[in-house]
Image (cartoon, rainbow, N blue to C red; front, side):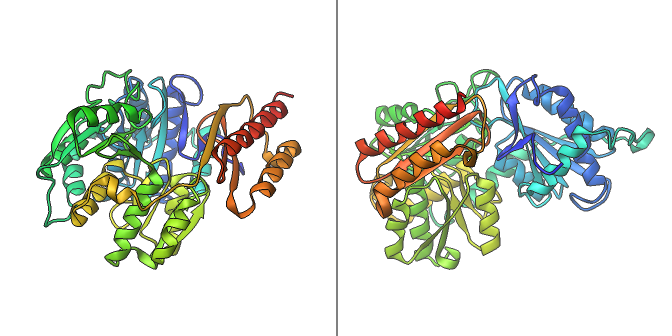
Length: 456
């Protein structure tokens, strides 16, 4: 095997109880992951322990138990932490010296989807080559006969204080000499993994918390709430005259911030604010921010006068983290709200990002809207549409031509990006330029040509 077929940009994902998200696949995944631990390819090369956590989907019980069965059947122990944000599982994996961590979540997808993400013992997502090896073991009979017996079978136990540990960790990111006393915060947890963690963090920092999306029932995760629907938290901010709104997705690894006027603050603006303030304090290593190709070109124009460089990667917070580690950088993220503070965490963390942003606001004594004024985005049109297949773009010359024509028209004043989603059967077309109406027409033209080509 030379190419991953199960793992996308953010793990395995699909409709729960249909391939690849079946109980059988989850069992095989658990066996494969445990085998790599036993062989020393993951973790520390001993009997091993693997953390398993999840969000609040109904199918999470099914997938969690199947993975745990697979892991223990290979002689590796399991630590179950229950519903906890994705970054919380990364944190617990590293802090408890486990060999790997598994997240059962489909992030912002509807409840009837589910997924599997993996972290190594250091709390970082696995490199592509290890995911490829996991797939090989899952899809072949290579470990079919590896079956410990007797006392060699693994054990499973629950870790009851995982949430409390994570709450303490998140609070420690906030400036120790400040508090959120007198600040009213609306927190929308999307009926997801942070439904207990997020309100506790902001409340214990002193804020008056208005909680939304904190009544999960297994089927309401991301349903009209959370980061996909910032208008929900924006409305409550205006109704309660709150100082800020925080909207998380189902696994809380990304955040949408709403200022005190009820206006959503772009993820790029949050990155710009944090980059500038960290640079002022000497905390922005190498004076560099890492972003993806999806971030607005206004980011460079905003930060360059402050002596801050922007380095770009392909889409996916795992690639942002990889570039940060390679360059020794401390801040990176995506406009979608995945923001990584590498001095504190190993992956995107929506609650941590919100805590850090509010810390900067308190240091400056400013409202979030005042801080956000530093960033002015270039007009951008982003179209996302379903596709029946994903033909490599270099095999679609008609698409290449229309993209080239648009790029020539805008020159240095604009930008075009066409890509397939790494987690869904969708394509995305992004066009930036000085004329909003014109770039909308350009994006629609590219989309139409692409759909025609893919329909053949």
